[in-house]
Image 1 (cartoon, rainbow, N blue to C red):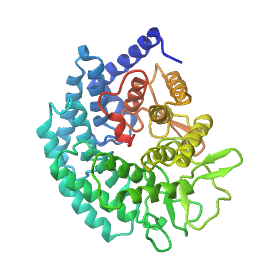
Image 2: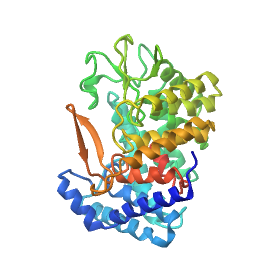
Image 3: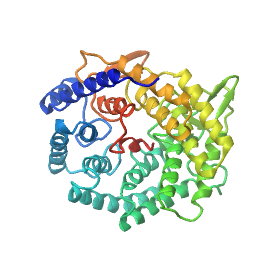
Image 4: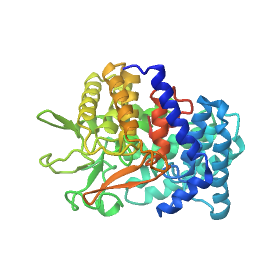
Amino acid sequence: MKLTNEKIGELDTLVLKLSKKLSNVSYVEDVLKKSGLEYKEYSLAVSYPALCILFSELQAHFPEEKFELVAHKYLEKINNSFETNGVDDISLFDGLSGVGYAAECMSQNGKFYQRFIAGLNEKIIERVEQNIIEYRKNPVNELFYDVMYGITGIGNYLLNFPYKEEIKDTLRSIVLYIMELCDPNYIDTPKFTIDPHDSPLFTAIRNKEKKYVNLGISHGIPGMLLLLIKTYEAGIVVPKQLDTIKFVAIYISNCCIKKEKEIFWESQKIVGMSNIGAIAARDAWCYGTPGVSYSLLRASKILKDEEMFHLAVNSMKLSIKERREIISPTFCHGLSGLCCLARKYYEYTSDGYFYDAYMNLLGDIVNLYNEDAPFGFKDKEIKRGKIVSEDEIGLLTGASGVILTILSCYRPVATKWDSIFLL
């Protein structure tokens, strides 16, 4: 299904209409205040860095609209927040790395904001080494290593600068720490296995006395696998890195549940428990088959493993068909994340199934547009058996991620914004 010029015009009209709403800083602030939700102004997940990225991408496609000026206004608000409150958090989705990613998207391939970015990078590099020292002293949990708040996300950001020697050194330190957690030579359980008493996540797992392995791309080992692959491809290579990639990829493959016509992954693999009663995670980027299988797709290419490649492709096709618990248009746990993953699958496989899939998902996202919603799209979650809707602006659960996804389905991605999600 190729989009007609008329349909492209309609999509452009929708994107510009929503973007002009979001360009009104006072309007956005007003809506967020009325929502009653608390926002860190520097959080990529839910706040202004996402708008900086959105308007940078829009600038590349609609230069006559001068959207770079809007991006700059939001960056000023972030910087004012830094000066008022100070920020120690260097994470990707909630700290300085996310702001750095936004500024890098705004830089127009390194032309602008270089002093600002260099200042952020200096702080990030200094804190990374300190964080790794602290992590080694304590029992592992997801927030040490994940893409959201941990070392994988920070490494993902720093991969924007692989040509800088000091950043190369920091990336090697990050890779070495991840490889420690993913060491194939373990006793009893891998080092990335987590005791639920040490983790702020999964407080209601099937058996709180059993350790588990987190299988989500957002908080689990698929995220670490993708960073190991991305660094390897970028030339940030340490001894036995490829062996570690192979070990983690095979471990994830072996966690796949196959029964009758189903192929899926759980949110977490509980160590020592059978697969009887295993429940598929929802079919999303954050947890579930789409994100997990994508990590295997990338691994299969680098390992030249045909069996792994077919597992990744076949499980993703089933996941797109099932769409378990996907009710939101947003990226993290909704249609936008699934749509972008289908698009990446098409780019890597040239399989027409995935082209049709992401085009159909695009249509489903647009159908959730709500004229009465302040930002056009609402994040939706099922909480205590009821659908709860929120008006949000962030990349993860807000309108920014939705608009960027829509745009990516018919215009080439200009700012590498989707690489934030390890894609």
